[in-house]
Length: 54
Image (spheres, helix red, strand yellow):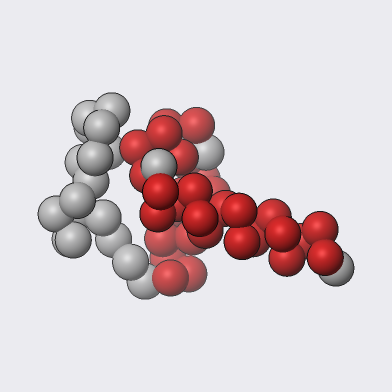
């Protein structure tokens, strides 16, 4: 179970630290985490998926 917990923590960390890269490289996972955390970068005015930088 530790590997799954580590994967989750690293995925969430990347979601917040490098959202543009994470969205580009792992789009499906990005949207899963976004729904799970109920946090939308577009609403928070920090991220535009059409651009490469937040």
